[in-house]
Each structure stands twice: as structure tokens, then as C-alpha cells.
Image (cartoon, rainbow, N blue to C red; front, side):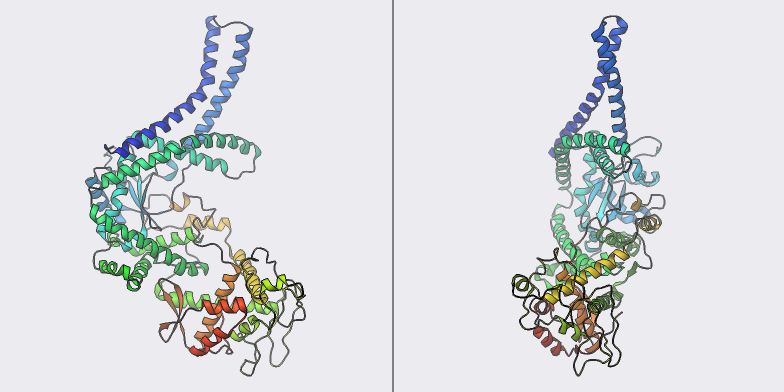
Length: 638
């Protein structure tokens, strides 16, 4: 370890953590030491008498119990598997140039090289210790070649941590920028190799893993009681070490930053701007582009390549990012990979699993999609699925088809049916006014005489044929609005009722389509990425707990108001495609978009909110007439 001030602080904090461990061990051995003294005094004839005999009879069993409890706690702490970040492992055969660059960087910094490299679908990089036996150490030949630990694999030696790199960095950054960004991270292997710091980190990670083990649900009352005691001790020790462990990590980071100043310092300042830009583009791509596809059971297989397209589009729109696009002529860091396409696909699948909770491998209901097919296979299908769900709910509510001279006689789904239903009749007012006005007797639960009133979702009505009257199903109280009362307070009663029913219908569909835990476990055990990972290393998806997926949800669940707005947008886009020749499109920054005559249409959100909140379709109908969209014409659903 170097002479950096941060390294000295880290070592001092590590010694404090180790002293806490030693004190805990001393407390566990104290009853045994007293019992040994009493037994030795009895054998020597010095500590005799009724009082000493009683002390021996009392302390000896207590010492044995304390030793057994300490041994059990130590066993749990030692065998508990520390948390490991889900990553895509990169073997040296899959990225020899990347490994060579990292080794050269470690030589310039005069620190040990990382033992392996892995990618994470996030805009961050760090070092991760995976020396625990449950993590599966890398093959000896790979580790020895990278970290230079010697040729004697059978001898015990310290293992350098794994370098985890954010996959968007490889595609957006240039080779020099990536090296400059990784310099402070790789420099952290120097302090990590110090025995005291490594021992303190192992102790803290073991305590954290023990707490996780004791917190797992169990049915056996005996094991639950035993592990409760182990968890109490582990939490007590962890609280004692928390402050010192945090200062230890700060010291290591400061030492690594100080050591890395001598390597590409000027370039690192420029590269840090690219880190922020990549984070913004990655977040926008996931929330606006990838999330709609994930919700449909499709996962974009080239997310990292999409980051480049998104950031290039951002540089074209934003004058502050004008200079960033000129870098694209330099060599990208993804050229350091032998098969960047296969690595991108593995990282994209892992991103879908982490941020959305999708299956671990492709399947009939979870298939990849290329960017060229995204408009047709995701955007068009998403809009038509939402439009079909909207009309199913309207059918269940007993809403009549649109009437008028231009309305189809077959009762086919039309945009006019939706607009007519959401148009607020004169004097009905918003939901807030209606709920606070005692003079109004009509409510969402008593509308049996309204032809467009409510009916149970479980009683599906049939479409009328010819001139037969549209059947009206018996009305049923709508779903309770207590949870969404604040969200729907500013909407009309019909909008609120339709939004609540859409939310219920969507929740029912998601519940029926949710995979079982056994199926997820089976898929995780069979999923693999041979192009990116090492054949000899264990499946990385089996080394972290995936029972709480998604681990990092991108957005909170959509509210009922947002669901209604999304379904109305989908219905309008379907009508535009079927009656005005519009086409689905993909905007790299905003996601699905509607193209009319090859140009992006205006934002529909204000007009749709006017319809939802005020029941006024005039702005929306004016926009439809301007683009030549005919709401009375039938649309094609899935």
C-alpha cells in the first residue's frame, strides 16, 4: 500500500474494525478462561470450598454454552454468502484488448491488476471482492495471468478484486476516455491488497451476509429462534463497525484518486463530462424506449448501441452537446471486445431482468427485438393492445357504439365511441364537485338508467349485429377509488370510472401473466451467455437473490389517470394509422411516437388531459380534423 494520506486513514480504520472483532472474540472466550482458572485451582487445591465449587458448577456449563454459541455465530458469518452484484462476466478470450489495457493501466499505477472483468448495465464502475468460496473463484490460469500472482496455483495467495465496468461506457466512450475514467477505480486495488484492509472488509461483509441469512423467512420455530440470536449479535457488531467501515472506504477512495492523478488527469476531466451525458442518455433510453417493450414481453437486444443513437440525437438537438458528436470518429471502447454484439445482448437481457423483473432467458413470451423492428413489433402492437383493452372495458361497462350517420353499422371499435363516452354532459361537472355537492344523487354506484353506465367486468357484452339493439348488462358498482381518489379528484366521473376499471383490468392481466417462482428459477438455471462469460465460471444469475425482482424499478406503478391517458393516446394513434396513413416511429429520447407524412406529430398530452379533466373533446377533435383523422371509422385491434 502506498504512502497516500487516504491509505493511512483506511488502514487506521481497518485496525479499529479488527479490534472490534478481537473484543467480540475476547468476550466469547472470557467465561471459558474463568472456568479454566477455577478448574485449575481445584486441581491444585488452592480454590476449594463450597463457594468455589458452586462457581465451578455454574461457570463451566455457561462457558461451554457461550463457546458453542460463539462457534455457531462464527460459522454463520464465515459461511454466509456475501451479496454480489449481478453482472455479465467477460473472459479474457472475449476481450483480450480490454484486459491488456487494464493490465497496462495497473502497471502505470503500480498496483495489482484486477482478477477479472465484468460488465453491469448501469453507468458506474467499481471493484468487487468475489473471493468468497460461494462466488466461485476464476480459473487459475486466467487469474494468474491477469493479476500476476505467480505460477504456483496450489499456494494460498491474495486474490485481487473484480473490475466491474458500466456497459454504456464501453459503447459511448472512446478508448482513451475509458482508460481515464477507470484509472481511479483500478488504483483501488492497491489499498485492497493490504492485509488489514482486506481482513476488515471480509469481516464487515460476513456480518452483512449473516444478517441477510437470519432475516430470511423460515417456518421452523427452533431455527427461527436460533437465527434470531445470531442476527442480534451480527447487527450489534455491524452497528459498532458501521462508522469505521464507511471511513475506511472513503480513505480507500481518496487514496485511489490521489494515485490516479498521475495518469491521464487532463483527459479524465473531459471524460467525466461524458459520464454524466451517458447517464442521462441511459436513463432516458430505459424509461422511454426499453420500458414499453419490456411491458409487452419484448426486450431490445442492443441497448448499449441504442445509447449511442440516443446521445447522438441529444447532441443534435442540444447546443450544449454539439461538441460531443465529433468524438464519434475516434475508436470506441467497445472495439476492445471480440464480439460486442453478443456482449450487448447479454447486458441488455440483464438490464431487463434488473429494472423490470423479466425472465432470465428468452422464451415464447419474452423474445428479443431489434431496433429496426421496434416501430412495427413494439410501438404498433403496444398501441393496438391498449386500444383493444380500452374497448373491452367499454364493452363490459355496456357502453354503446358510436351513433351517427357516419358510424359503422357493425358496432366495430371506433375512436368516436371513446370520445362520446368521455364527453362530459352539461352540468355533470368534475368528480370533486360531484362528490362534494349533496344535491346530486347520481354517483358511480347508482347509474343503472344510464345507457353508458357501469357494468361488471365479468359480464362481457356481445357486439350488436345489423340493426339489433346493443345489449345492456346489469350495472354493478365500480371498483373502489380510495387509493386513487387524490389522483382522480380533478377528472370527470366518467373518466374516473373508466380509469379505475382500466387499472383493475390491467392488474388482472399482469397477475395472470406473472411467472411462478419455480419457472423463474428454472429459467435462471438454464440461461447462459457463452460469448461473454467464461465456461468454467458458475452461472452469475445463480449467485444473487432474484426473489425481489425488479431490484431497481425504473418508475413507480402508473396511476389510474396515467393509464387512461396512455390508452387514449393509443386509441388515437391507431385511428391515425388506419384512417390517415400515419406510421409508428421511434424517438431515441422520447420513445414511441406517431409519424404523419414522415414528421413527428404534436404532443397530444394537453388535449387528452382536457378531455379527461373537463370532458371537453373540442381541442382533440380540432387536432384530428387538422390531420385528416376520421374518428368515426373503425380501427384494427389485435
